[in-house]
Length: 497
Image: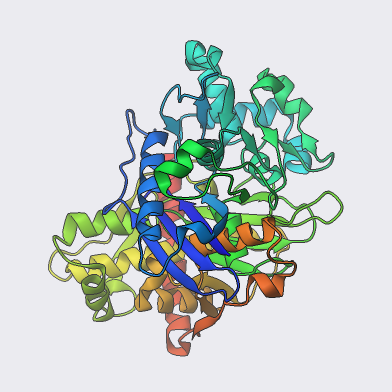
């Protein structure tokens, strides 16, 4: 059996086809050719057209199926990974009512903060494990308050992955993990939070039904199958947000294990065996793919919004036609610390680690006589990793202990320079594995359709491709440089408060 994995990002859609028996990748495809646009009608807003996700998903599936040696009739299950925290609203005909308000949109921050205070901070942190912040619940409340005509048309609201599943199967459903990422889930009771629903006056009628993460969640429609070149009736048998799925793709399933990603946003995701929260909700906690009420598996998620998007922005602005490999070569020639140039990557919406503040990104200590493009590129790498370190210090305050960090060879972790900086700044060993979101979704599909009966079977093809240890001579320098970077950040936060 072949397993089809979909990874619906905010920049690209990636599809992988896995041979379920051998665990080998037999085809991959990525669309579109350059990053999908994020529309910002107002400062701090971020929207995308769900139809754009679907078109690119269909195109990527067709491209992967056209690879020599792939037998489309052998595809037996589909898994979906997707960008978290977005809001899609559809009417009774399952048509999208308005563009999706995606994960990095900041418009609902004030509503979420008000809800945090009025519902009760203690209740939110013990039951929801988060402030409503600018997550899906707050975004839905924003629609209710600011676009009542659109709200009145809602048949169901969906997360981005729920929308893609709906296009494939015609079913409107979601998962416990999905409801927790939207901050609708009461971890104490194992149900939707009645207190939150009552506060926002949300009717349960507009909620999608809840299905298990690993299960038959719907069958491929005949019309869609005909268009894609697949058999009708294939089950969608796995679905998870991109960060729980990334951790799953790296076989991070037990408390104490840690995963990292550096795509459009950057994440460190550490598993806990008990529901735990950070009092100011700067680090967020969501149900992992294997979470149950009786066997808690909670992913503590540290997110930096401006990671790959910051790198791409600087590349497009200062790099001209340079490739990422060219940029990597330039950064390798620049000394540790970028000759004093500091970058702060907070230009992609309100940052949770900064208390849901949107400060904007900026370069500091620029010297026109010393700093070149290479210095700018390296300072971006270092500033991104310093931001991770800033979040890790907050994460440690929750009692989480972390050690070796796992990542896939994708996005910014494709850069040897970035990998080295990451290991040295965090002072932790970095394991690079042959995994990505689409492969995780494919393995999840195999588990959900019961092709796999154990974790060993599901991850038979997963391997460590590189071990990156901290550079001893760099650790001490980076400790001092990070301290200076953090001090300037705190000064900036005071000046802009």
